[in-house]
Length: 138
Image (cartoon, rainbow, N blue to C red; front, side, top):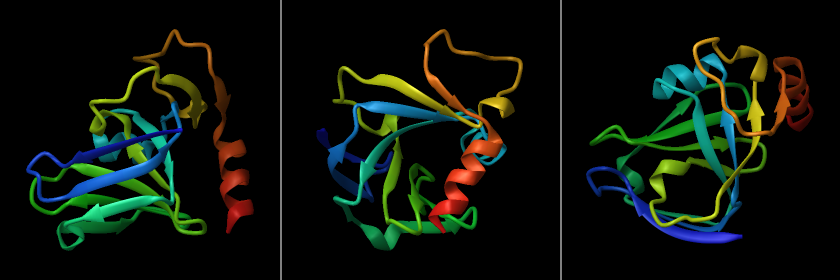
C-alpha cells in the first residue's frame, strides 16, 4: 500500500490518504464519463482518508451505492465514496507523487465507447457483473 497527500486545484481541500492501492481501476460507465468527460481512472484509498477543508466539499449522491465529492470552489473531482463501506476511490491524477502504478481492472467494459481503448491487459467487468457486485453490497 502507498500513502500520499494532495489537494484540489485551488487548495481549499487537502486530502491525506494512508492506504492507496497501487493497482488502479478505470470505469467506463456513462455516469463517470459524464462526471469527468472521460473514463474515471481511480485509486482505491480505503477508509483511512483525512479531508481538511471538508466545508468546501460538496457531495452528490450519484447512485444507490455511492456518492461523489468535489470542491465547491474550483470544481476538482475529489472522490467516489461507497455508502456501504465508506471506502474512497480517488482520481489517480490527484496524486502527482505516486509511482509504479498498474492498471488492474476496467469496470463497465461493455459501455466503453468505440472511440478509445487501452492496450493494457486487464481484468474487465461488464455492466451485469458490476451491478451484481454492487447490489450484493447493499
